[in-house]
Amino acid sequence: MDRRERNLQQVERWAELYNNEGSKFVSECYVEDVTVDCPGALLIRGREAFTAIEDAVCAAAPKRWFRIDRKIADGDVVMVQATLFDPDQGDDFSTRFCAVLTFNDDGLVVNDTTYLDAARWPMPADVAERVEGLNVEWKVPAPA
Image (cartoon, rainbow, N blue to C red):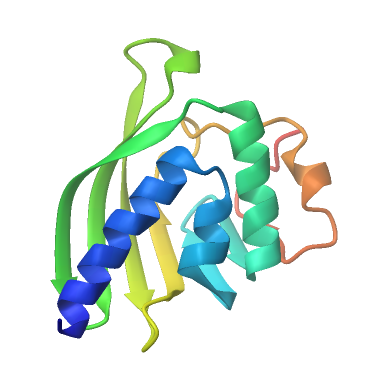
């Protein structure tokens, strides 16, 4: 299997873990010093900070899941168009996002740039407290 195919398979695993295993997808799919950039929303540096954010999201939206709508791979980069669903926000709730994932030689994500509508993404009010002291830069006011 070539790198492109491996990375596409890793995206499927990434989605499966996100949908079924809470924040486990972070430890299984990302390098320790990952950078996660959600332009206009927040910048996360490091797996510890990313796990803390995702633990908070999982607590606020335990039924959230996403569907991959399209994947495009080029070398070590996979672009994923997807739709997030959160039944706790209503049966018809959904929001689209696009993740650009860059993989290393081991098939782990080293950079994740995710474009999303931050106003529609589930984020608990206490998330700022949960990540205090970790490497998270808010581009919008942190939830209060």
